[in-house]
Length: 295
Image 1 (cartoon, rainbow, N blue to C red):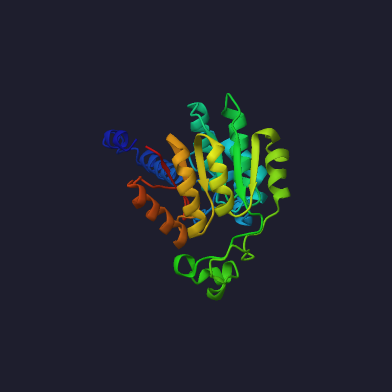
Image 2 (cartoon, rainbow, N blue to C red; image 1 turned 90 degrees about the vertical axis):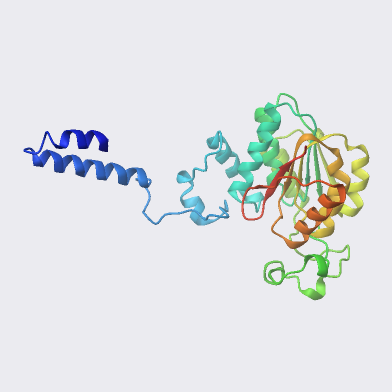
């Protein structure tokens, strides 16, 4: 439009009021493209974490656009399970996008989550699978439903555990007893998956107990895995899942790491990658969530 303006400017010198009016319209047009006309100039969602239960997020939910395919469906689905998850909007939207990709590509294998908590992520996987999948998949869902076990001080501990989880350095002895952090009821997870998502109960298996006890046993008879979502927070909880479940992930399958931002989880991942001689490209999702594709 500016090129056209310069062409006619010389011809319209005697009509100065037309030139001024045209300049005014061009400036206003640029202002509209710089910002959403319904939002204030200083409006911005959090750059690292958009938490779905944040009052600010809910107040401005209709303005939330992150560029995901079929985002209207994603937002509707996320709203249904937002009280059952602590994940950010981007973590949930990315999970939905991965499940859709696997379903549309008919990539075989079960969906596995280690660290179900209240079942929000599992329910999201179930709903997206029901919408896009041509066949039904088995869900393998691991959780102690006693909260996190006690961390290992040398591997896991950092100061924020004290104010966020109520775990002090003295509590970090690595024992397989509840630390009291992130305790959830199995009934909440069941409600999310079977009532909210309406996934067939026969196709979801809960493996209840500490991962060190349940994962090695379940892995022996589980079969191929298309999606492995790791949400164990701690070093040992992550490492045992990688050692026993990653070999079951098929080529082209996805591994989502919910707690890459936590010292213990990241250390476990990096040690395991070195142990088996791989160096996957780790894709960014939000401040702590990452994923990679098995080659």
